[in-house]
Image (cartoon, rainbow, N blue to C red; front, side):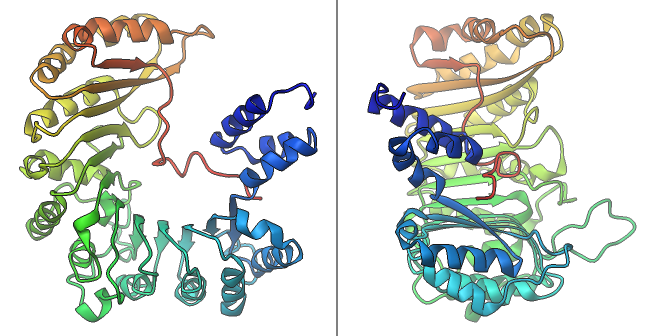
Length: 433
């Protein structure tokens, strides 16, 4: 089979499977033939997962020392807390250091699902990160520290080679109170300069923050000498995993956010706003955006993306209403691209017509007519609860009918499919190698 399959087709098949992030499927491809194995290997080992039991860390170190040809293939590593309640010993500082020194080509690191009640996090993670000499991208997702003050000394040891940073639900929760339904993240306040400095400033190009990070400590750190924000190109503000009970942004925090947005305005080209449902407290960043004049300050913004954080998180009415509220606030001359991702839950075929005849479509069409957009992409993620029939084409037709002006200007693209983005790490992850 492999001999009669054109190489271009082999590349395409493997590339599609890799984009689905399915390691079992990639392993299956590698078993087709030696040629398929050769082309699949870089995808299989591009990303590896190391869980915190010492055995996982030592396993990878031994494996790579016995097969050093695999080391250059590994460019992305995820550290995951899986042994905290299993009785396995956590990895040691020495094991972490040796593992990082072996992984010489790692450019991207993700740390997620860590609870540092034991205080082990800072020690072995500092040893691991400080030995990654070529690190360019760092993501911290759901990292719980013992105290709020621990976060910034830990962040200060990260190499200044970082150009992409993602912080989502990172810090220390306020001790449980019976009046709180959830435990909000505590705020350490203004960060001392001695903790904010990391030697050479980070020249970030991409930054992702959840609404949980809308805090005084976080924005005072971002505005400190630890950062050179003159290169920031893309900013994503996303929802906070239902861990934030605040309904409004405090005035002092809002002032820091204003200062931050004014600082990045000259270079910021792409803004992504990820929403989790309507009216939930996790959307604190949306509250700030809607009730301030910050969007008008983004004089270099070329692309705006409005997307749901998870399936069924941004229904049609909410998506269109939010878009219509934001577009008039934007500084128009530089805007060229708009991406609006809508979640459509089909419970009956009548829902398609109801979706296509919402009055908010007419308002959006008028807003688009007075804008400078060259490309408008409307993506509809359809959850079909009606039948096995595919209604995607019908949905696309209704959207084009709803936006006649944009359609006649040939700036409109409509796609009824899942929109690919990296803001859903909890729902779409690599399987452990």
